[in-house]
Image 1 (tube, helix red, strand yellow):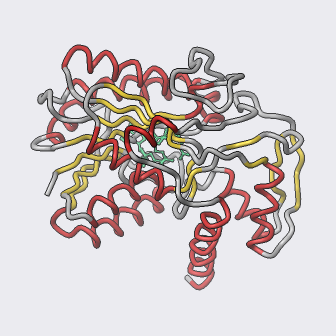
Image 2 (cartoon, rainbow, N blue to C red):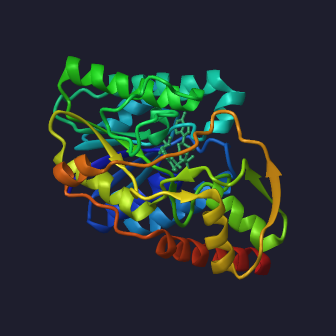
Length: 321
Ligand SMILES: NC(=O)c1ccc[n+]([C@@H]2O[C@H](COP(=O)([O-])OP(=O)(O)OC[C@H]3O[C@@H](n4cnc5c(N)ncnc54)[C@H](O)[C@@H]3O)[C@@H](O)[C@H]2O)c1
């Protein structure tokens, strides 16, 4: 049984990762400050799932990653660290860039600094946004990453750089994982798939940015969790891996897939392209396949179907509450 510290554990990705770790009998120390970026009740519900799945193998530390003392306590006796705590999302980072830098950059440094064993592997949750408007598609890990289009993207790239410096100075094995638009049950409510499903189900206007041709590489959450676990187990030196579905879906197609699954037409509210958004994301995942034996297994239709089943159940529970 390994003991793993997961930061951001109450959130979307973190809670799925913790569930997987607990299911394979690991002990999980979950650190999260329950940031109110979205309804904290959702995070408390995620924690309740983890408590019931893990029993005494699950412990929760309500703390901020910028609190060095709390991080040091949480790190005691751990065999690996997965750092997912962050302020996520491109658009809100434009409104509050200083806070994004403080949490995502300073917070990452504070956490790294508290790791006192040089053998503890560190997995950093990075993002496809580091590629900016890269012309080279599919995006490979060695491609251009010095043209971020938002403070969020810059903060994730800075986090990777801090990890690299830490690896150089302290020798810990480090994997930076660039996640490509993750979706699935418990997805953050402001993310496109969740927000669009809500608009379609309630017949409210769906914010449709640009002409619908922007394309995203959507990745199902279980596949991402699989990649995180593989990186945690196998990382030796310093490595960067793309974790993405390797196929792209246009905004127009995404809306159509959701309409079909939910059995209702969307009411589109057409809006101009958003500053900070990139026109395309598309992962080259050959490195993750080669070195981690990872591949994305879930098609968009399968993943959307599972997401919608979860969404419908939650909606029904809210109505009857
Ligand atoms: N979801 C995606 O599509 C996606 C894509 C690329 C990268 N990522 C990265 O993956 C990670 C998880 O994303 P998510 O979608 O699960 O987001 P999320 O907001 O659901 O989870 C992040 C968690 O971090 C916590 N947190 C925020 N600030 C904190 C602080 N100062 N101290 C302690 N905890 C703090 C929040 O309370 C939240 O529970 C983030 O680092 C994000 O940047 C996500």
